Image (cartoon, rainbow, N blue to C red; front, side, top):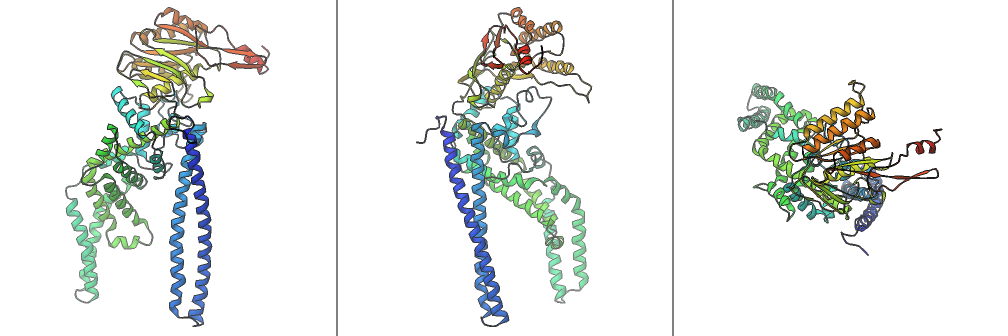
Length: 600
């Protein structure tokens, strides 16, 4: 029996059912495709035989050839329709395969990683796997356009305020159960293809246009008509050839004068067709929907007007395709006599003058819609995830049964955490592989999800708006001549400089200052953390150096020690991955060395 959308198995059950339906349909269409191919071959052979009997032997009237020709054309058209339907079915099947992979934890093999958004200087993205293979972006992204991918990346990299988060949550909640909408979105465009940067497209749309475009369009059309008319008239002997030559010279001079301008327009939109084609379908989805959530209604309003956005973008798409026709080797010679490049680029300029100011709104609407659809899929596939409460208040981060969103529920142990003005710092100690670093990334990843409007992997989460700053994966650089320790302290300085601003800072430091000796490490770490707390920040630091546990004692009651523990049973090290109060009292380093055969 089918469950409900709150059933943890409902998404997997629905995806499996629809995947089986899609695969069955694809198999049927492949059989039909093969059969039609065989029929076409048979009709072709029959047609050759009929032509032989009709033309060589005279045994049949010539008109008999029309019958197999007509049959072949009809089969060719039917074949093309079947191929398109088969390709559509394959895309639907791939959509549900990827959905099941996300549910099963095998999703890093599918989708876009977002490598183009990686920024080493970002205060948290690299440390908590926001972009790259196996990242939050790859898990979430179902966008089919670069506008959608850019919007999702922007939301991941820049936390929103409480009011905006609430508005986004309402939109995601409305779309959560609408898998039909997401299926239709999966049929649009090519998510892996090259496309024009939406920021560049916005900039292109807002460039100043020439006030003479209407006049230039009239001149170009007039020159083409004059050339055509004089060609006919001189062929009829009404005007001398010199008149036609003069008309051609005037047309060639005008085309040469516009050549550089034509090239600028063509180069500006070189990658536009893929993006524009996707935008047409995405905007059409928005325009045809009846939304309830205010943010979704805003998107629908932005695409309205005297002419719907999808229709206007469709016109631009057709103009760009017409411009691209000049590259066709059969049409290129004729295009010169038609001033094809000049006329189409001027038409594009006229479109830009008419719609340029609105294009930014259309791109924003399409991008946000795709971002909302991506987050709604995550919400649908994670029915135990909860929408967090993000509210303006004193600095706060409180979560119960929080787990890492990049790990399936069966692979991680949930934990509780609370940071507020009373307890602003947790010093997390523990042995190697006990879960300290994963716990920090769990907090960071869920803070990112919460402040982008997504549900979080927790039973409940309440937080104030927080900046996020991390130091977890600093590396040395041979090219820059930078040691690991120097790279880390530069990173720590960057994070300290963020503190004291608005919103307050949530800092996450893994094995802080472990590139120096224990004495300097403890003094330096305590000074840094004290400064952060004085500036109203909240955070966690991890360490396997037990001397750093003294930091919590020195900063009490605003700080306290917690730890993860382990058990060595025979030759096997086991971990419970549960957070315990107090500092850790033992280390597993020597035990691990002995387990792998080192004599220590």
